[in-house]
Amino acid sequence: MAVEPDVRPHRIELKIDGSSRYEEGFASAAISPGMLIERTPGTLGNEVTPHNFAGGGGEVMIALEDALQGKTINDAYVAASAGPPAVPADMISYRLAKAGEEYFVLLKDGEVAADGDPLTSGGDGTFTVAAAGEEVLAVAVEALSPSGANAHIKARITPQRSLDTYE
Image (tube, rainbow, N blue to C red; front, side, top):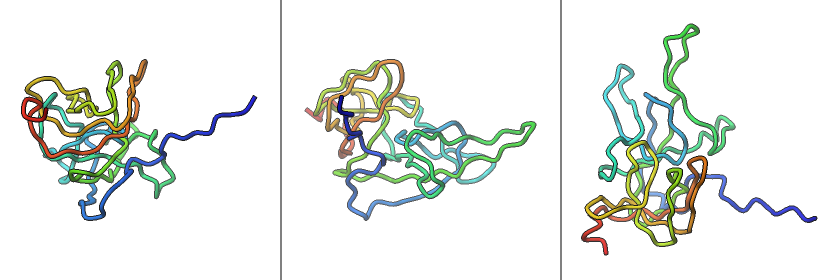
């Protein structure tokens, strides 16, 4: 029996124009590559956390994989822990995404997304299918319905607007 090749992307950045900003920050919570994140005040200064406003907007900041450290899109970043033993916070690489760019973002477990469905913040760093009145941050570029765990989906970043004005 032939083995099916693994055709899923191994990177979070799929199609970028090169002018979107690349930045780094310290994890203030557990963060997985492909998550929607936001800046947060903290003791380390430049800290980021999963985006926590379900259906809300803001800067579209996507956590990237730490390929320079040999990590993949399946390796999560960890926040600092006082211990014992003390664990320092991971430095997170992320992109301030621009409209038209495509990323492999994290779709919330249990969602049913069709190709072309508008996506918004799930309130925990994941993306969900947008409902009326919610801010559209991206559009699904493939169909996916994760079951049992969050899963990566190809998505194109859109100019932000309410779903009411999107359609």
